[in-house]
Length: 485
Ligand SMILES: Cc1ncc(COP(=O)(O)O)c(C=O)c1O
Image 1 (cartoon, protein in one colour):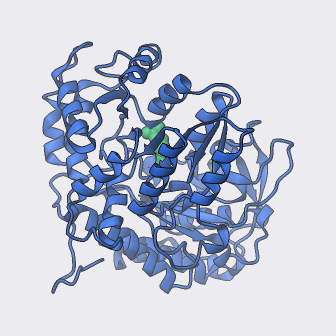
Image 2 (cartoon, protein in one colour; image 1 turned 120 degrees about the vertical axis):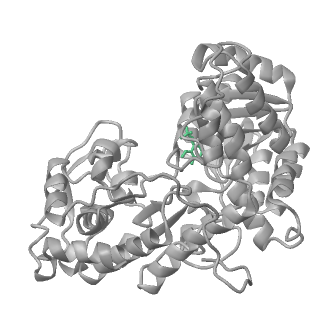
Image 3 (cartoon, protein in one colour; image 1 turned 45 degrees about the vertical axis):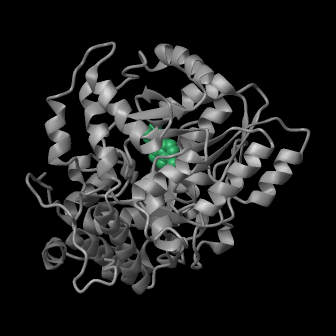
């Protein structure tokens, strides 16, 4: 972990008060489970997972302060004091005059986009998250991603690889055939490897949007993590607090959508912020229909209380140092084991190329599945395939593999310890060292929505998974590995 020039290593700035027991399954049990779920790890029951890296969204551990606020939750339909505590925290940190609660980030996106968009509109981003892109499409618009990051740059080092390409932005804004309704910067850029966006880039995009009279919003899910990267790597920010940096980012935009499941360190919740009072009034009318009255927006009072506390906790530098350090540490251990990772590691996840583990499995035999299945089988770890199962299927029914067969290991906030991280790396290294006989897969069933098939797809290995000599490990070996890290 990062030691920031200190004498001693950085530590997690929290201690354990209550624990959630993990069931340590055996390899034989996991093999049976994999067969039962047709080798789709989405279908595995959470209690049968040893380490769950499917997402960092809503999976964080709340603090004692957050838990204690649950009792304070006031569940009045209208005007709950919990709403006002939540609103005050959001206003204090983000500085917007209008705060509109929503049940989670996509609820805020839905309300904003359906209020401002017309059919045929274009919306531009450094990287629309999938639900965000889906809401643009749902309003009969077209989302265009213009990241600076090309797929060729994924595995090379660099800073602020989440930035938006401003020359493409100007080109699109000059194109008279398109009505650009809004521009949205996602911090950090989840679909682009969790890479941060620099303040300079946000400032430049903001100036361009002002010149062309286009509203600029932030998808602010991981704004605290992004602010930490700015503090660490952008000249001139080293002596500013994370809160000051965050405020400077928000001051450059007209509003934001937020999933409190990330840097709100809450299990559910979200909100929309705006400066434009007239637009906020329209959004609140839509909100009543879709999310709920504007002093709860689909959240309970106790959830709003936890967010009011969590937003501040996510700004603590010692927490961010430990969290981003944990991600970087996992990335380093994997890179040291010869696994190709997206560099540098971003805030919330490590992304790695599954073909650096199973180069013998061609894209349409799903190398990402071969590796995620092996990670579960050998160590009970669940990761997310972001390769051909996730991305290859086209609307016309054909399959076009993406440029990279990635796997995302998203790290829940404040949940896992250093030894868990070392265990994850040890399991994946073991999978790599014994990968030569791992088979590819074929799809035996899929749903009819090409964008969503990964959730429910059924698969079958093209050869028995245990066929290789190296894969006939006994259950005891597995238990030894768990104990030894
Ligand atoms: C960048 C980004 N935007 C929006 C969302 C949607 O948030 P929610 O899951 O709360 O609807 C996510 C969720 O993962 C995300 O990562």
